[in-house]
Every structure is written in C-alpha cells, then in structure tokens.
Image 1: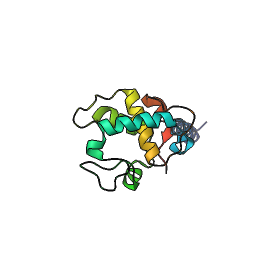
Image 2: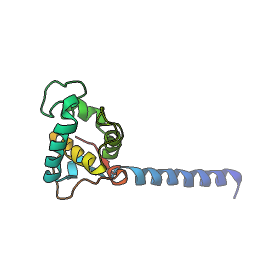
Image 3: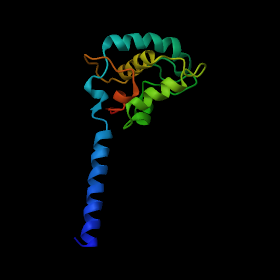
Length: 142
C-alpha cells in the first residue's frame, strides 16, 4: 500500500472512531421523554420552596428576587441543548448560594424534577436518577 493510501485509511479510521465516540456521548433522551415522576416533582417543589425560592422566587413568579427564574423562557434558552447532568452538577456543587454543596444528590434530582415540571416537561413513570452519568444522557429540549 502506498503512503497516500495508508494515510487516507488511517485518517478515515480515526474519523469513524471520533464519530462513534461523539455518538456514544451524545444525549440519547430528552426531558420531553418523561424522565421524572409527579411524586418526585412534588417532593422537589417542597425542597425548592425551602432551599431555592428565597433567591430564585417561585417558579410561577414573573420577576425574580435576586437570581434568574427557573420556570421561564430565559431558563429554557440558557439550558437548551445542554444535558440534565450539567444542571445537576451546577445545582449539586454551587447551590444553595448561602450553603453551596449541601444538597444531597437525591434532593438535587428532586429539585430538578420540580424545575422540569415548572417548565412543562412531561412526567413519566421512572424517577429521575440522582447521579451525573445517566443524567448526561438526557438533553434539555423544549
């Protein structure tokens, strides 16, 4: 095999590997697929009121207190195309602002379920996971 053909074969194989890797890492589900339960969103609503509403306001508010609203088009535009895992990491590590990192993974998942509900993403039959890896497979799409 000559050098040009060999180089083309190597580059082609590398390109297929990158394409396969990208496909494997791409979110395979959407928040529109019913990724949380109504009960989980209800528990999350109580947590949201206790831990989040003092800064973000109620998810039904029109004007935020200090921080961005989490139940409106600005939230949807900010997070569109990102994964639920990205939101999970942000909340888990940086919220609430007065005590960052104090929410448990379960509490974080329940708060996200409430936020998804407030943004009119449909509920389903399976609870939202409380770990980053499976949540990285769910895309925020409205």
